[in-house]
Amino acid sequence: MRDGFVAALRCPACGGEHSFTLCAEAGDGREWREGRLRCRLCACEFAVHRGVAELLHDPPEHIRAEAAGLERFAEHMRLGGWDRELVR
Image (tube, rainbow, N blue to C red; front, side, top):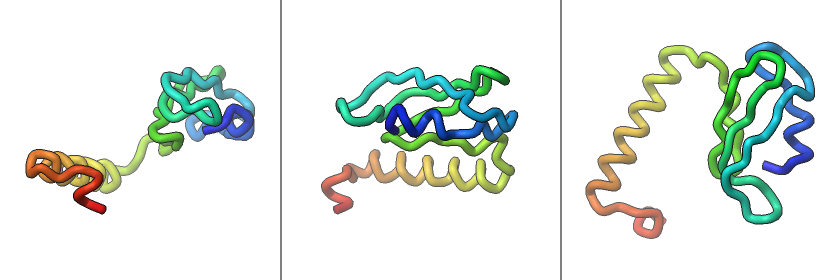
């Protein structure tokens, strides 16, 4: 996620424009890879993982259930010895 991109985002919780501040935790010099976006208007926070902001505010139950299932599957694969290279 690039700094200039943060200014273009609108908060999905309150609709505020230009209201995000980025609390970056890790980057590669060109973009921020990990961190959090925080809305100055409503104080909602959204995670940034691998350079992608997770802006889905209050997702429906079927989305939460699918995400939990994917997490369980990924953990099963990790315990089975699968890593990124083996998947490729």
